[in-house]
Image (cartoon, rainbow, N blue to C red):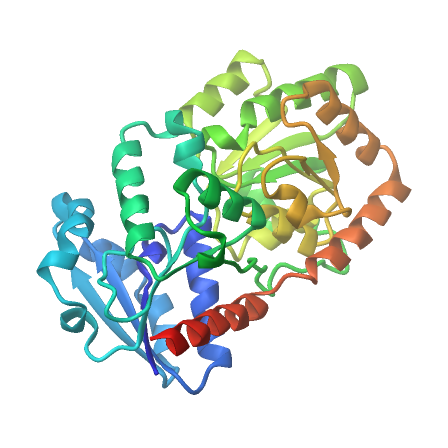
Length: 382
């Protein structure tokens, strides 16, 4: 069969959605030598196309994938998804195709063939203040995608529950396929010291680590306050390193807490550098209030890091009993948990072993095989 994948999420280079899309496609093309794949890229700028040309070239070495880029002026890109079904038949975009899978929220295709949409999470339903200007369009796009889709794939049981509760999607129309961690996220035999990566980023040792975006749901203000409490009451020598695109409100909060000397914000760093950061840290802390999955937690665990994370949303599904689960609004509890781990070598070693064991329950190959099963089941119905 011929499967069309809307891979436009790859254009959002810094997001978990881009990582999911890249890893799922790579895994599908690796394990599936029977079906043909058409990768669609809806893009508004030639600059973004050039940015991802190298990654596309990797996939072009595989003989069962075809690539098609669809250029749309940036000022109508979002509106395009509202009008596509009535203007352009799916055959005009994809040719003869058996199934379409939109890898991230948008499904503007008709239902003459099976259409699957991956919904990662409903963050803007839960935290509209994170990007209030986007909320109306986001909700409209999501609701149309659900209506037009034959089936929904999501990445955690918690997200599935939200989709059922908020969007009123029948349970039987949703399949959960957990994410994995790239093979590069692995525990090093020796902790990196004086690494060029750490030096270039200005990261001193020892340190506690957070990686990810810096939206309101990530709860970084509480993490910063908890780290300040840790420094004042427990006198640990560690710095806190925040890896992710810098946001002014976070930098302002660090300044307001007078923590500029103890907290380093590196900005975005590429995936090849991340394993060095994970392996050099003593502890990973991720007290987000809401996640579709929580991929940074799994990456940290794959590197053998002890993990402290929230006891809400999807995060207990990822960490299981390998991490310490805390209430995301409890500053003192978070600080106390950090202190326990940082001052107990035996506990850190035990948690490291548990992290490695738990991380092996997840893989992109497993995600791809479960996705293929959804394809097969849907095709039997059409």
